[in-house]
Length: 234
Length: 244
Image 1 (cartoon, each protein chain N blue to C red):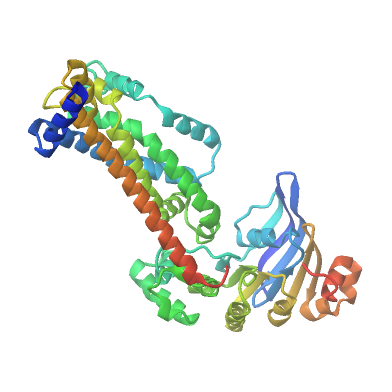
Image 2: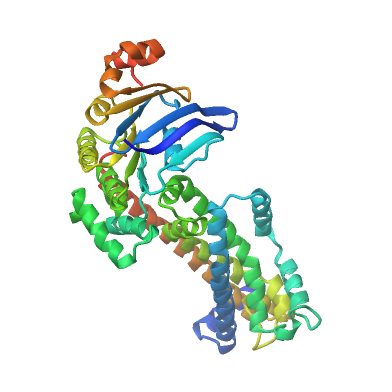
């Protein structure tokens, strides 16, 4: 499979804190990569480097120039306007004419089951609906790679299920997913590959079956081994 | 009755009877400040929005200067604008000294830092929450600033009202560059100063009451706007239902 993004020796510092250290990572088309690790392990930072929101202090980031990217954040930011305009604005910023952007926005809202809420204030939607709206906004850009930073962490079980179902559908359509998660069940259901981070380093990069097998993981990190066996929680 | 109560009674009669002299001064005063406020918003809001999102060397120093200019004395502004507009000054060719335009320029200069600094703070706060999304969508610093400023439009409306309050109540700058010429550049604050010194307390008091009323109305408008926003936000939170 061709690499959409390739990181080599990437390091990111926030002042005196080393958020990422010597990270090598390759994301190929069609993969569903889960980034797991404790809080502060560097998952969100890694996602931002992959998406280009953060420039590494060291190392290289190579991207397939033709591929398009989008990102969904943990807490979706919605402008004080309708759900449709929030999606249309993303399209307009990517170069689509406003009238066409609004038409495409309606299609994107229908894709996530929010067509009925097109004219409602985006900020008046529930947490789950706002996250679905964020997915519609990302999906409308037709990205080859979609980054998601703990997209279901603040949602109730119903909201989690809705968002997960959409992620699975997007992946089914051939979209590459890279997502950070603390939810092992979600990782099992959605990922094909798991990248485990500890203190800014990638300690394991395994196919999902091997990751949950645990034996190999315990060799690289005692903490990860405990986590996979369900003996500790992040 | 004593002098004060006489003056108050006469002042109220002037207001109630819509005294032409009083009305002309009030109208001119509101017009000067309104035009200055619109100009200050046109300059200060985009500048503040850009400063709220842009990061560049020297930004911290620029913000310190901008915040210092919040306390700019109006007489100093008047003096600088006077020097600029005086016949030998760089803008003397305009012939604006002691005119409506000169007062507008002075009040604009006075209010731009207020608008820019408050807009910068408002947009920067919004940028902390929504900046990454804008960046992710490929918006330039200018676009991020303008979009977030538009998103904070209710806060910006409050800023515009506060700026108008600052402009309409200042006296030093318009006195220097306007000259307080009767029927031409006399505004509420300069007229109050003059009529008090002349001993015409009823007119001064009437103007004072109108000025206070104007500032009170502006503050009431700000309070109502805040209350409306809070109610609106509460409604949004209530509709959200599910946390997050």
